[in-house]
Image 1: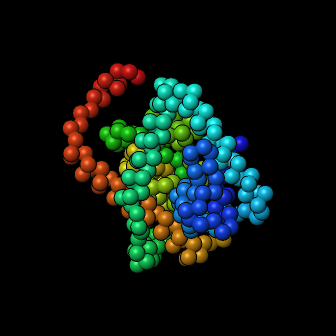
Image 2 (image 1 turned 90 degrees about the vertical axis):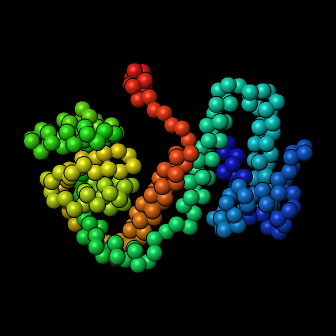
Image 3 (image 1 turned 60 degrees about the vertical axis):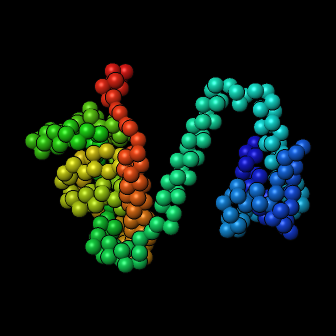
Length: 271
């Protein structure tokens, strides 16, 4: 049973004051404040619903079952098991990483003018889809070498199958038909959607690696997206780009405070 999913519904239990205890197991209590913290604040209450005392009891019982199971696991020593401890540590690290990055990008978004200016310059690229394939690798020098081979006549799909590290490699790098915003990387899209049918890009760097992109075919979207829809995609793209840049800038500063040594040859020796 998905205890957490059911438990989240208690947010709409009527007339519960913030400090009220709404359930307990031995010395552990659950208050309305606890609930609000778990779901991210009062603003999320509107997305949940409970309609009767019977359903409220059912949801609270779900929390009780979860609590007694956690206690049973702790009493049996499962939290001392090496495998479980490693899983808990990985979960802790992931939570800290996400919280740290959210703290960096909090409130970060492009201005209305930035959105409108970008949409005007790149408007035509948002009104078409493209059948795209790519090669992605981590080594820029190798990427430039492969690009030279492609321009000299080597088969793109064969090189993608041999060298690309992406999941599309087994299909010759074929990503299918995509539109702006779907790749997840603004630099990828800007390069891909200004290519003509059959053209190959220069080497394009994104957060995932170095890409060589080929546009097999393009076609206009039907119906044509409205300007408001395009601006929504632009907002998403610009926000993501700003956030990525802010996180990378913070990482550059943080790394200066540490002594970092890399041994790539040792890693290669294990492969």
